[in-house]
Length: 563
Image 1 (cartoon, helix red, strand yellow):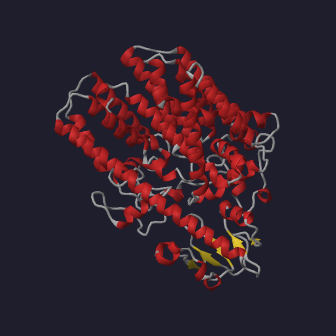
Image 2: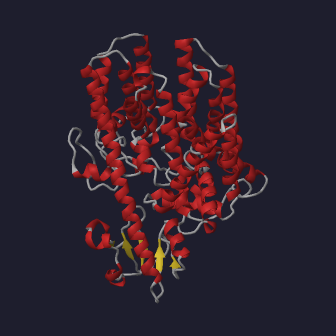
């Protein structure tokens, strides 16, 4: 059953994307039929040749998890900056009928609320947003697009749990569960799961891709070919660097399998190549082909004559100008630090401060993106690993983790965990190898301690993220209700598509302003993700109508400032 659940929640959204791509090609737009067709097709494929009893149980699981995921995704508000801004812009535009194949470049007046949103909407890959728009088309709730993140997290856990069963010493109830849970709860994934951020998908698809390759090459299981080809078609449509890592890491893994087992699957190699190329040419027609035709640069605006520098703003001052080797290793050892932290940098490595805990659930951490105890856990695991018997399997494992480490230096900004989330596989590989090896109790005990430290990182991110999302919902709903009750003209200046969407859904009469150009006097409400500017003052907000959390908890209260 675990395998079927994993396959369903991977293939269902990816088949949905294929259908939506066909809709674009024939001149249609995103609609709810893609969701319905994909759901039926994938159930039929996965449950073919199964008994009636298994089919019934499986469908109950599929439907139950789907409904629960939609409920969570729709009711948790995205508190991230980019998620509320251009990611949501893409989803909203697609849901409103935009076809990026035949109308690839949008003008500024077609994408409201901010001056340069149209650049990122027009020229960035938009695969995840396409699927999310299909979910929104079914539910009518813009927030529900985050359901896709839950689908992928569920699928990742199931794939890893099923894979661990191949190793005798790991195939024990609690050990198998803990290793699978640790592998799944990468802090990058946890921090971004309730947002429209997409960086975590690199980790999900690389990990599931490795499992699929192993099962196809070593176990000769052909059932993993379709999900691998669907991923190959889809990853170019998420982000260029994600497609790059997916291809490079899987090719190296295929090479390692050939080196150790003298097995090479020509059909797998050919099919992977075809699916990835098709992904770039068809699935990612917008942006790579449209950018090439219009801007003569497939990855505009990141490189080229008219490039927009986004790297300098994500580099902390305390590593700016340093060599790449220093930046990467500093970030791996540092505690979590984000751009809106109260400190300028993070100079502590073996102690935990309040600021570390406050920063750990942030969606775009600039340093220490794998959590507070990641460095300490890695030290423990590597020391234990070095003490084990140096056989051929040990050497192959060492080569694997060294390769993943070297990957941090290939593309720019390897110090950002969200750009290289696959590195979290290193401690997971070490945990699996040590627990499956012949070693003493104290070595296994140290390994469990390291695993608990990694789970604590994930738990801190999960708890902190929950608090952030609750705060975002409470404050947003209160602001919307107060604006709705006003008789005087209300001006709202915000890049948050969610905020504007919620104001319109409840019938608020307000005037939208341009943040950069509008010169009216305005106050600023310091919300978590995107600050909101308005002509309302603190006295315009009725304290009697405040939710209980805002009345009792200081961090939930609205904070005003001058822009």
